[in-house]
Amino acid sequence: MRLRVLMEPRHGARYEEILALALATEQAGFDAFFRSDHLLGVDPADPTFRPTDCWTTLAGLARETSRVRLGALVGAATFRVPGLLATIVASVDEMSGGRVELGLGTGWFAREHAAFGIPFPPTGERFDRLEEQLAVITGLWRTPTGDDAGFSFDGAHYRLEANRTPPRPLQDPHPPIIIGGAGPRRTPAIAARYADEFNGALTFGDRTGVQLAERFAGFARACEAVGRDPDEARRSAVLPVACGSTPAEAQRRAEVMGSELMRSTAAIGSPTEVTDLVGALAEAGADTVYLHIYDIHDLDHIALIGAEVLPHVTSTPERTGAR
Image (cartoon, rainbow, N blue to C red; front, side, top):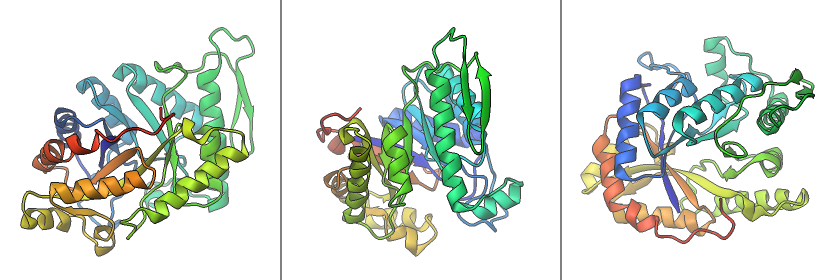
């Protein structure tokens, strides 16, 4: 079982604040530090929200951390064209010494796109673009050095002509790709073709992991439909968390989440209670859990989970075949 930290700042963040949280994550012993890829916050009307670019900050963290893996959960395919994104990720992978992972999804936050002048196509087109982006990114990364023909792609939304100098990530064959979501058809089908990790997404109120298990089963069926062994890919889940040494401390941290809807899914309570809920996700099939953190200034929260939860969940045996 891998336990990771996912940053979702309610009011945005400066780079120094993100760095402090990433360093606390590394010091506490977590496997990875991930951040969301958003330009607006949970409340799109919040005038105090401070946006930061996901991959710019990850590049900085690549040079200022030494062990934790780094990535986005998940990036919006609407934000960056695939050739540029492949180059950005490969650059950060080299800067980190091979610690980067690419999470990519369709994008969903319409107001965010409108606020920053980014086109937001209909759902079907966003899925089409995501699929083409993954074909381009993996195609570029897998094109051999010195290939005279280079990499070309002629899709409905993206066209590349004879790229003979594709970006070169440090990891072989390329950084792990994470795809996930709640969709029952296209999401698992795309993940079956491209994902090294399938993320079952956040399901409000699913404390027992029943819906998560159903999504994992859907992904397995999609893998079998294309002749892939489902156990080649990891399976992950997101868990909002408010852990406290006392009930009052846990409730104080839960209030930062903002909405009752978010708290309905969260692990709120003592280290033992949080450990039990992580265990429920493991029983549903997850081998990786992203702890969703909203108060980025509460570094004591990270230290507490690292000391009192992490040792109990990382001893969980991995599924056979998990990368």
